[in-house]
Image (cartoon, rainbow, N blue to C red; front, side, top):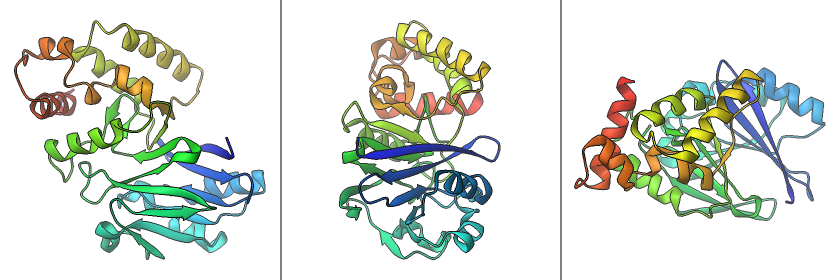
Length: 255
């Protein structure tokens, strides 16, 4: 892979990511929960920040921008639809747009649901997608602004990416997500195994993010509303995928 990918824990349970093109040395940062750990990692690695990509407007994803850019100036990119709630953008992005990072295509995907105007950023050459609070490890973001239908449509977009795509999501929620997932998909051997691995990783203090799309497709109930076992568990054998997704989300909200 011609890229380096670094996961940076921030705040109590957030993640930021650094993506570095090895040939040019260009560095993109995805989301800025807080400046200090990101600045420290840049100094440790000796990297110069080139760009900041913002996924959505929630403070725990953008509040570190002023302090970080005071020390590490960089071009800021984010969704045009969310621009009124983001720091000042140098490039406002639209759904379906492709922009260039160090000569590599970056695909912009509207993944509204958690918020309206939330974007994911897919870098095919790096085989990774930055999903923040849309698709998460064994979960999806709570629907603060969007509808279940919107979020399910967003999940379907992400499900079409290559299965070897690395999914870089925004929080360390995986252990609690696994406990919930087992309530709606209790007989899934891949989920049972993954849950055990997650418990051990957290016991060892190891991040469970990023994950892979193939693993999410096998174990994440928010990508599996068509699964007969989940439908039977919910008593929704004849419902639409959207309605099953909505029920899974509603149950997670109450979990």
